[in-house]
Length: 397
Image (cartoon, rainbow, N blue to C red; front, top):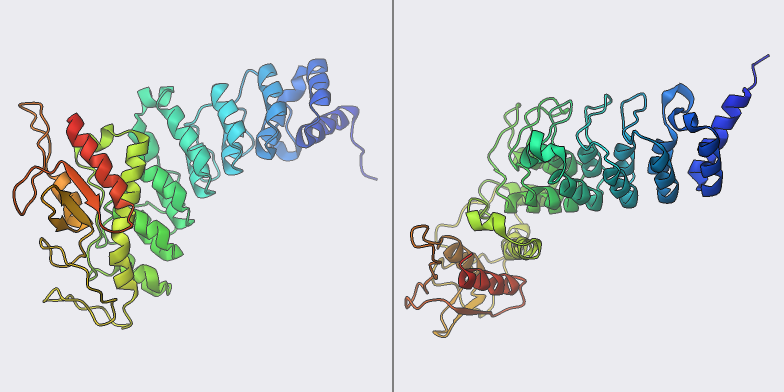
């Protein structure tokens, strides 16, 4: 005959059931009666009451437990913290409460050697990801490790949070990480695909959105993994045709984020988000042309710069700088026009004069008039970017 549960075990099970179902009064009463219950774990040492509350999103119960528990980083048998489980399940309120209680965001589990940041990225919870990154600015992590080192922290197999987000097709997480300083060209160690960059993993997963984000942030289409494959070859192997078209080395280069410019890091989140959207929108015309290609063979670069028969033909003017893109930006007051790509390049390369500490206003390449006003010719998000970048120049960045 098997042995029945002892009174203590029954009491413990009652606590876990009450935590999971959110019975606040019961949890309070049991915790007050026997504080030692808060450190007791379920069978095989899997979860504590804090783990259960964090994983199930029971924020009120979690708060009660944290008020009575001195250790918010209690570990299960895999050394996972309640914060890791809250990030895994996307319980943003629990993530915030645990961080407020002093939970350590730089603990690693023994299952995969991952932090709470890895968990949030892997499971696609961009709001939890953002909250953890915000906490990293004001916690001991920023002092002991440095923020950028934390953003690019590697798990036990050499994968950064960006690698995991790209592999799992988590576009929003990819964007949050890239805008926070994640390295777009970092290579993995032994994460099943040694030497892979986030772009390799996005190509493997067939995520066009992730590929687009990574390319806009300067991911290298020619970087090879340990098997000598570029991301294009990975996309072709897994039959992700759309990704392969954008990753083809002979396809036109995308417009990329000018991260090397100092003023970029000083932008407000709103302005930064506006520029990110502008870059994506500016690349859409290029992407549309690439994806419209009907040939299955590798596209040959055009020597004349003319339009392809498969592309839409209209009466719009071509940019007189590059002679390739359609004019979408008009300079006021002279009225000269150019494409969004050339406008961004023109504005990006006119950096402030450090000696005089004054902003150098970009000049119209046609008449050398100072560009103080611009307007959009078509409905692109780039218009908002033009307005924003004009204000940066007026303020001296």
